[in-house]
Image (cartoon, rainbow over all chains, first blue to last red; front, side, top):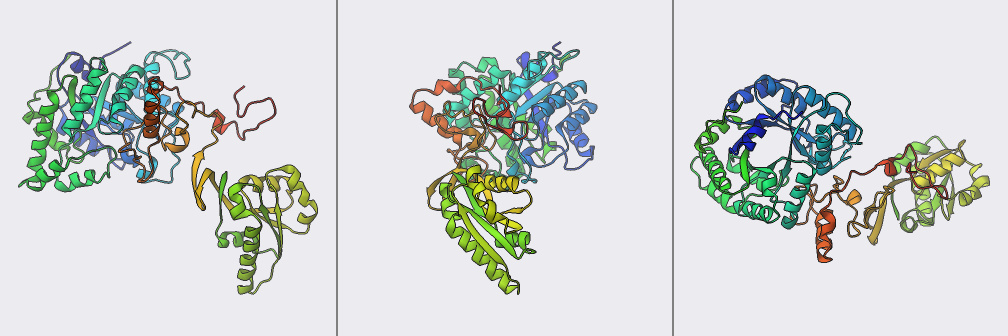
Length: 307
Length: 225
C-alpha cells in the first residue's frame, strides 16, 4: 500500500520543497549525523543521505537513514549501482523498507577509480535507469525477475538525479524522460551555478512535455570559499559547472562565507521562478549548519506542516 | 587482436631460477603477437635470461621454439618430443596459449612470459586500443557500432551519465564519452529515436557463464539455450 512520505506530500500539495544532504562519516560513529540532523530539523522536508560519494568509503546510507529517522528526520536514502548487483540492491531495498525508509534516490554512482579504493572491482550490473525500474517493480510487489514478492512488499517514493550541465544538452531531457518512464517521481539536479544553462535545460524539458510528470528539485550548494569554487571549477567534482563570473564575484567578495550565502539565496530565488521547478535540494557538505540561514533568507521558512 | 605485453624479466626469472634447462615458446599467429611474441621475441628473451644468469654466476640452457598458433591443439601437439627435454616452459603468447600448454603438458611447469591485456585494434605500431570485452552478446548494432560495455566505464546502457562533458568521460582526461559519440552518430543518421526506449538490464551470463564459456558446433556461447 502506498503510504505517502512527507516529501511526497509537500510536493503533491504544490508547495515549494526543501531538502538537504548529509554525507555519512568515514567511521562508525553516529554522533556527527545526529548533530547535523539537529541543525537541519524543522528547516527542510527531508534529508538525503549519500552512498559512499566519490567512490570513497563512508558509513552506509541505509544505516545513516535509520539514524536520521531516530532524530525524527525523514531520510532520502541514496542507492548506487557501483558496489552492488541486482541481488544486493533488492536485498538492501527490502531491508530499508523494513526499517521504515521510504524515499530513495537512484544513482549510477561515481566510478571507483575516483575514490579511495581504486583497486576495487566496479559492479555496475545495472545503470541508474534500470535501478529505477527495479525500485518501481519492488514497489509494485515484483522482484526484478518479475516474480511476485510474497507477503509485504516495499513502497518507495522514487527519486533520481539529472545533470543539466552534462552533455550532450539535447539528450539530457530525453534521458530524464526515460527516468520518468522507468518510475522516477522526483528529480534532484546537479548543483546549479550556471543559471542560463539550467534554464535552457528546463525549457527543453518543457518542450518535451515532461515537466508536469515529475517534481524537479534544483541542486543548490552555497560556496563556502573561493578555494572551494576553484576546486569544483577544475572539475575535481564530476559534473559541476562553475561560470567564470562566479569565480570573479567570489574573488572580489569581502566576506567569502557571506557572499556564498548570498549566492545560494539568489540562485534559489532565480530557479524558483522557473515553471516546473518544485523545490531545492541544498548540498552544503561540510557546512550543514548554514542551511537554516539560507532557508530563512530565501523565505522558505517555516516549512509546511503536513499530517 | 589479442593485445599482450611482455612481463618484466625479474618476474620471469623468479619462475625459472631453479631450472638449468627451459623452453621458451613463441606464438606466430596473432597479428600483434607477431611483433612481440614471435621468433624475435623468443630470441630476445632467451638472451636476456642467459645474460642475467651469467651475471649471477649461473648457467642455463634455453631451447627456443615458435609455433604457428599456441591456441590450437594441432600445433601445440607438435612439440611433444621437444617439451620432454625440459621441466619448465616460458610461453610468449596470450593467456590462451599458456593455459592450453599447461592443460596438455600437465607434468611440465608452464609459466607466462606475457600479460594478456585486452582485445584491441592497433592504430599505429605500438599503439593499441581496446575495442571489445567479448561479452558474448554484441549490441553495437543498436549503438552505431560503438560498444558501451567496452568503452563506458560504468557500462551505461541508457545514455550518458552526468559526468559526460564536452564529449569527454569524467573518469579520465582523454577518454571520449562513448555515449556522446553514439548520440552524435545516431542523430546524424536521423535514428536518435532508437535511444528513447529503455534498454533492459544486460544478461551477464553471456560474459561470465557458469565458469568457463564453451562453444560447440550448433550451440551458443555461454548459458543461453
